[in-house]
Length: 384
Image (cartoon, rainbow, N blue to C red; front, top):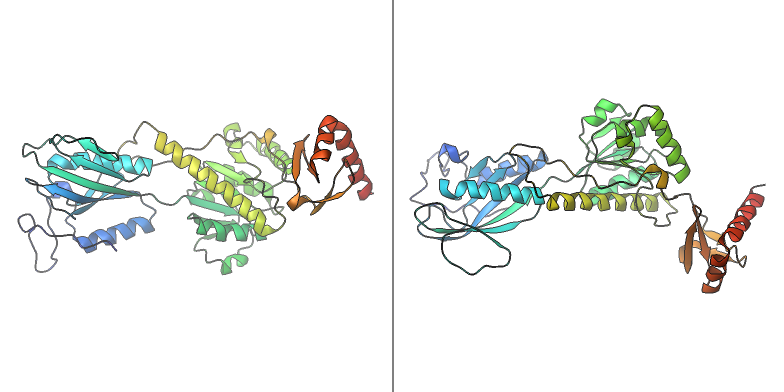
């Protein structure tokens, strides 16, 4: 918990009933330290955006003191006390900037001549008193809302991993019983578009893997999510893209589809598939945060802090996530290669080719078409 707010005897009127530090109405609600903490908890529970400001230095004449705190909401409403009207507008603007970038900051409000300090943001003191105030501003950004569709083993594992990575997870599936062991507060039955929209997801992971894929993906793309990740093979993802266009999904929304859902981790098990998908979610989350931090334009007061989606790859260029056997036959020498420990991997013509040594890789690169044909012919014969 945060330390109790120090009281300034010349600025606070103590009520025997509330013992609250009373501040002028134009500076936000009168709140003591306990009330500020309660407001902070309510905003966190509601996934609200806010910043806590703490006075770390105060040189007279000032109307504040070291340790004084205030909470600034995203619309600029200030609760608590960090100084008079001269500093209030500066603190609110700095707090909103911190909320936009997601980064804490130190600010100094003073007219005194001092050498620039790394990491300290300087502002002129507009008050005639010419006091000095230094404040630390800590933004609190709500974790991104993630919607996971499906009740497959990979979907269930992704729910667990995503929560550990700090996402607010909501799940939706045709069968909800499997989620009983995964401590999810919000599980939606089915893939109703309006129900999914109501969750206001920042990201969606479609992990249906054969159970109502088209219905789930269409509903996901009809939400406002910045990106939709799909666990599917390259071929299936392309087919689903065409199906989405047939169903009337706008091309801009189809372009928000990411498949495969994360980096290639050579997954074999549902747990590993989920690991790769959540890694993809984390990567997109960080890109969104960086885009927001780099944005030169601060949000308007009261505007929603919408995520900035990264540039998604088009459906037609999706890398393959076809399952790979544990052991692969090297097309050059015919030796079986353990996929997990293969020394060299080459991707060509939409296929991954695994090699046991440098020599086989070099030989393959001299005539890749020849060896790709050999590999395909071998697989065809194995299926016969």
